[in-house]
Amino acid sequence: MWQANIILQNGQLMPYAEAKVHPMTLGMTYATALFEGLRAYRNPVTGEFKIFRLAEHLKRLQAGMKVMRFDHVFDPEKIRQELAGLIRANEPDDDVYIRMLVYIEALGLMAQTGPVGYTAAASPRERPKFADTGMSLGVSSWSRLSDNASPPRVKATANYHNARLTQLQAKADGYDGALMLTPSGKVSEAPIACFFMVRDGKLITPNIGSNILESITRDTVITLYQEATGRSVVEREIDRSELYFADEAFLCGTGQEIIPIVQIDRLPVGDGTIGVQTRSMQKIYFETVRGLTPDGHGWLTPV
Image (cartoon, helix red, strand yellow):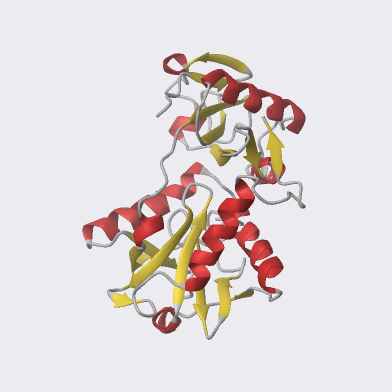
């Protein structure tokens, strides 16, 4: 497997081990940081690398910077060129996971809004083992953050303390992962992925008012499902007890891609095996991100 040797920091490529941020920056002391996870997929036929939905990731990053009142925004074309250069510099021979982090570099008071720094790392990332076996999830006693506390639709690093606590509890309780509920008791999402379930033939997912990240992968699944089936995904509130009536379920996210769920709260999802619709969405998704089907949406950016 290839190795991450070069990192991008404030527009400069440098050896991976040499990137540094002062420990007293606001990005460290108050978690004033945002991140994006992106993937560049290698086409198995041509060997070309293309970043999946780069424009949408950068748009979400800019929106998060606006909400957190960072005093600087980035030129998307400049970032595109820098990320492409970062990928090429690492000479990957397989898929690339990109983690971009934007943070306040200032030392001092909590309310400072700049200067703004950024890093981006390109690294290999193996396909999750649960993609083939499915996951066992437990509904967590930790509630998902509310929009009026720390907006989950903003991909702020501070929000992921909530996700980390949830995941740690799930592991301690013997589950592979967890599902979080909103403060009002409706299904929200997993710690680092969005949730879909099939019930009575319908694909259902919590709506954006359910304290979820406005996930780009979620939007991808919704779009691809509608194109493949001619049916719309149902976006609505989901009760906890509905989870036990699901015929299939899966998680999705840039890092996780599409992960089947075979058990919730130690009860089987459907017959406890990976469902037909879930397998179908996995196939359609991977054909799309690898450029094995025509890119009618303009989602693939060449490196």
